[in-house]
Length: 236
Image (cartoon, rainbow, N blue to C red; front, top):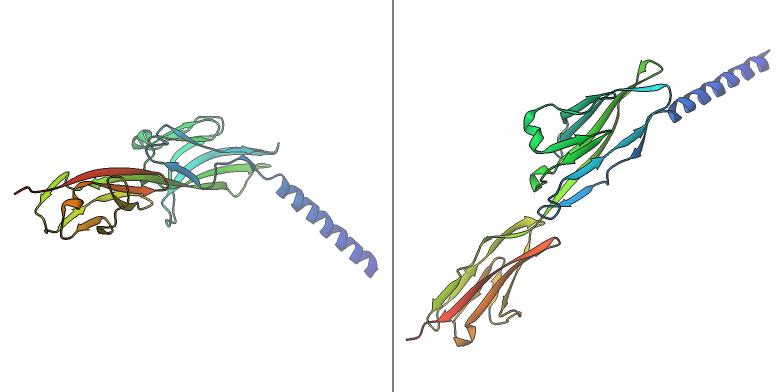
């Protein structure tokens, strides 16, 4: 009797496990997702860029709606900016988003004129029912990273005239992401008779050999920018 009861319990547990496994295997799944993270370069990837999701359903599953959301890294609660019902197109929930985004079916987010300010985590959320029962939402997310080539923000004085023996400082600043490295060269080649500290170049006890063109070059992994200053000696 006890053996029969134990066998029945084991059989019931096995059947339950098979049912749960089958239910899990039928859950909505992703067949296409964006590259994670998605990396763009401002000024280079200046055409429309797309984040594409595709998912599959089982015969007993039905989509209720799909949401597109975004949040800044570190934020807890995302903002929903577009949604669609099953079988319909996306609707942007605020007119201001039309300058930033476009959409296309089935689940494509189009990024327009991407800049460094667009570094968001983008989410897609699918609400669906299974066997006429609402299921936990299915979601996926991708972080968008936008790098920026260097841009000179403060150029050195284009032409400087100094007396022999005077000191001179040239300053050059640049922005970019990652932060650019600034290198000074004279007439196109590194020169040992000056010192530079960050974005500033220092000429001490200027002599005739210091006359020439000084180039400030800002570089990072995504590009470079240059500016040229000419140093002359006053003739007395």
